[in-house]
Image 1 (tube, rainbow, N blue to C red):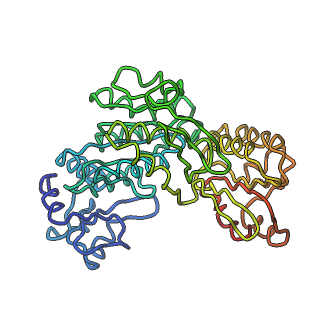
Image 2 (cartoon, one colour; image 1 turned 60 degrees about the vertical axis):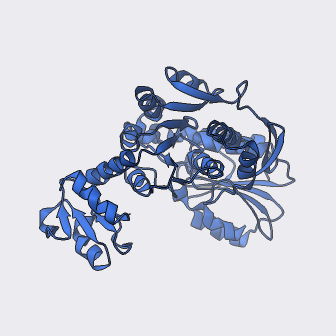
Length: 421
């Protein structure tokens, strides 16, 4: 089948799934393959569960009636998504960065949703499969789409922009993340800036933080909208204990965001919202009422303590920023529970030691380091190889009357310790 024929089917059945366990009635199933699974084997099951049609790339699973064979299911899914995006002609804002891209995406959605009918990346659907699924969720009535783009290897962003074809782009920042996949910090910079490369070539518009020298340098040569100090979209950081407090355009904004590091994300949403004509009052209302979820800078009061839960992701840049912010917060008893930062490759030992070296300056009541990477550090903190061992300790040695920062990579499962805090 050619792409037009597949698109004709999609036009009749505009729901797409790649998970044979989740097959909405009259949807299209694309059989993807991975190291430990082969979706081709489940095509008939998808049909039996209610899918209208299925696409496979191994001929023995096709019947030519409702299960069709294509050369490559993943490439076909991506091609269909790009075809759909171009067919609708919708304006798309691409968002990437080492830290803060999900929070920024959600702030942008909150702000732009005040004026526009928009759709945006749900959850963590920001990779070579998630981006096509996001694009295929766009409907004719949508006026804007915000597409988050993640990367863990060179060329990842280039691949995604060539599917999403963004008109606008925003790189939140570039830090030390996924070094294992990129090989070096320079590799991170090059890959993230593939978004700028696409915008430059296609006469797109970049929103960038002027106070970030890397973004200032790499965004040259295209139409760009700066935010930050001495720009049309500057603001005042008025406080952050615990919630970020911002002054802008005569407004006083008390957000529900934890961490001064979220100030840049708020600035980005102000710049983008203003550029797209959202009224200042609406921008302020959207920012003030946005509540982070999914263990991203969440504030939680328990019967015994106050918690800052930022355990969805962690890298040296975000970990350092979280600790600096925590150092400036006022509380009689402060505790940190830090989990390993993943995918740092050859710099892992050095970067974990740098984080451990920051702890004495925080004047903590207690510090806990969780994971095999933190176990190698020279530190007086209590160390546990796993969160399960930490939970055993906490059940016998409860913490009370403390402000506690919980920060680590998602795979460390630090959120499981919250019930013991």
